Structures are given as C-alpha cells and as structure tokens.
Amino acid sequence: MWFRSQLSVPVRLLPGESADGSPSPRTFKDVLVLDPRDVPGADPQIGPLVCPLDVMPRSAAALVGFLATAHPALRDAAITASMDSVRARAAAVLSQQPSGAVHAVSTTWTVPLPWFVMFEPERRRLRLETRESPNRESSWRATMADAQARVSRAYELAASTFGERGPAKVLEDTAGWLEHFDGNSAVELDYGGLVQLLDDTQLQSDSSCEDVNAIVDALESGDAETVAERFEHLREFWGELAIRERFN
Image 1 (cartoon, rainbow, N blue to C red):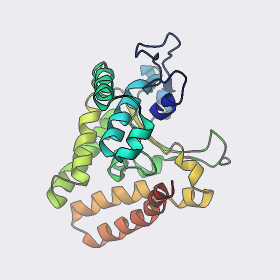
Image 2 (image 1 turned 60 degrees about the vertical axis):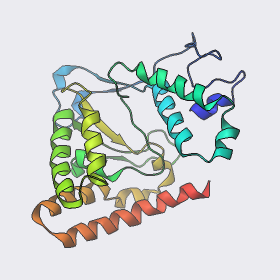
Image 3 (image 1 turned 90 degrees about the vertical axis):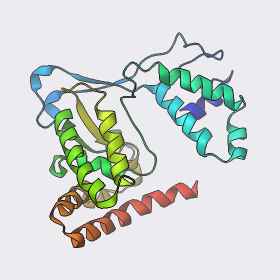
C-alpha cells in the first residue's frame, strides 16, 4: 500500500495522508466486523467484534521493513525522499497507535507456522468459490483466552526443545501482541490472497494447522518421529509457495 502511494500525483509517502504529510480529509478508517457467534467459544452477548485495519500504521511498519531489507538500488528507485525523513515519518505514525500495536498483522507468500497453534484445526472455515471470488476463504478463529492459553503452552514446549530462537521467538512475539487486546476479543488467521494462488485440491489437502498442533503434542510426549514427519509436510506445502517470491 505504501508503494502505491509513491505513484500518486503528487507523491504521498503513506496512504491516507496529503503530500505534506498531514492526514487527508478524505481519509477513512476501514474495519472488519465479526459476529461473536461465528467465533468458537465466544459469548454471543458481547456484541459485534470490530477490528480496525490500521492502514497507515501497517503501511508505516512495512515501509520500515523495506528500508531495512531492500537492496539500495531498489530502495532509491522506490523512494525519492531521504531515508532519515522517511524513518522519522514512519516512526511518528507508529507512535500514534493507541494500543501500541496494530490490530492486523500480515505477511507475504507464507504464514508463520507458529501462528497456527492459536487455533483448533477442526474449526477451519473453508469456502471453495472460484479463484476470482472475494468469498473464497481459508481461515480459523478463536477467543482471545483460548489463543493465549494455546500460545503459552506451545512456547514452553518450543523453548525447552529448540531454545529461545526460531519458533519460540515467534510465539513469544505473538503472545506479546495478544496482550494488547481486550480479553473478550477474538483472533482470526485468514489466508487472504493466498487462496487465489492455491487450487481447490491444495486447499482441501492443506493440513498446516493440524500439523503444527500435532508437533506441539509430539513435543510434549517426546515423539520425535511425529515431529519430523509433520515438519516435512509443512516444508513441502509452504516451500512451494515461498519459492514463488523469487519469481517476482
């Protein structure tokens, strides 16, 4: 989203702001709304669950990541402003987040595998519409309390087995992110645009959530064979998607 802003006339650093950096009068706040009855275990009386999409702060965070990882030639071609001014503007936007964390976190091409521990595999929502349909979906939902409990258990097992890096670090960061939100909140993992890259057979055979949770159970029981087998399933499925990033 921040990259598309660079193509506007006049150039805007981030979506939702004017060329001088002030909020655009046309800025609107997009939100997602869930019915608590669609969240396993949620209290249906708490009312609609509203998730701000935080377009500007998420774009600012993505921009900071781009500055840190992009090749200098690509960075110079994509952004005309000085690096110091860009970092300062992005930091200012991020500091304005009321809760200190964005409500929606996104990745490209793959899903961080530890995220799947937040959900019960059988609670998957799968809709096999045409690839072009906005209703095509693969997602999971959980209450905040359930997600936090599952992450805590997985973190303890991962840290004691693999150390504080790798999966344990992702789980630690995930737990810290969840703490920013109300206890009556819900958590959703949605494949988003990935469902356009996967055909129906691939989506139906996707066992990622089951595999990750089976690994957690196997770590607890000391079943190294199951851990290795499930990791191989995950590597095969997500490796095919991840390699596509190199084609662009």
